[in-house]
Picture 1 (cartoon, helix red, strand yellow):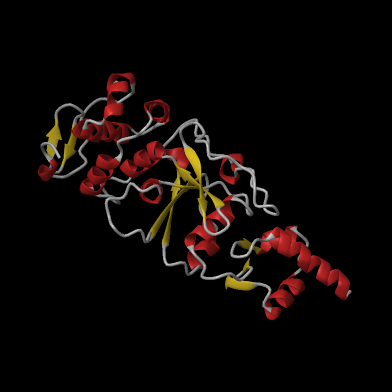
Picture 2 (tube, rainbow, N blue to C red):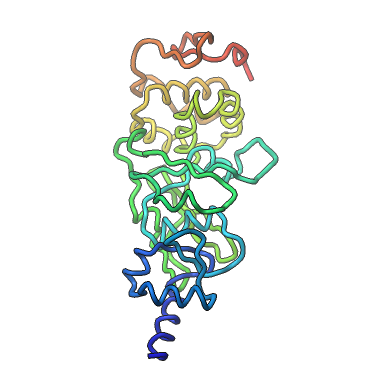
Amino acid sequence: MAKRTNGKLNQLMSQLPEGLLVDSAWMSDHGYSTGLRSQYVSAGWLEQPARRVYRRPRGTLRWEHVVISLQTLLQQVYLVGGRTALELQGFSHYLSTNIREVHLYGPKPLPGWVEHLNVGARFHYHNNEKLFQNDPITFGLTSLAWDVANNEGGSDDPIHGSAKSMPWGHFEWPLSVSTPERAILEMLDQLPKKESFHQVDKMMESLTTLSPRRLSKLLRDCKSVKVKRLFFFFAFRHNHRWLSHLDPEAFDLGSGKRMLVKGGKLDPRFMITIPEDLDGQP
């Protein structure tokens, strides 16, 4: 019996990398009974950062551990997107790199246990299907075919202009994030309630190397007239070189005015209200 138990423990060591976490459903699916889990926790082989969640101890639990675990071991379809993805890729105009808010995009809400984890950051879930049609997010994309046992596999090539893989941590685990082209549209979608015009303005100023090809596909797939109008407003405001390859008239920008700021000033070209103090060139 002891030999069998040791065999299961060795199996767990190969299936669950140090630092990452899984839930009780994963443990059951892989043959680890409730009693066996309790035994591993008591012996220190596993720890429980939240109820029904297990982890092989390794340093402080961070939000990246959680997201990578969701994207790979737990086969959940989520992308790190919006402002978080842009900050991770070095586009933030703030000096601090300590991310406090993690924006995740996927087809269904996060597991309930996520909000009970102490990771020093707050998770915000967004339904990706509300913003994009023909959305290419799939498990195959977010998992990047990662071989857990050998810590290899996957690709960092952006797929459909929508997502890319970033190596994270000592073991360079794959963290799947929105490309800058997608992330800025996700951030614009949060205007004006969750993001400010001035934050977006500074972020757009730094986006000098966007791909017109990826932008074109994403803008065609984008369901939000507000987002597309805002995108072109900020793009013309900063007049980046890639803008010469995009024609606003090639995209459905809807009709009529869009009041985004109460008491703001109407931009005559894209028919959206903007803050008075954002008028003029940056």
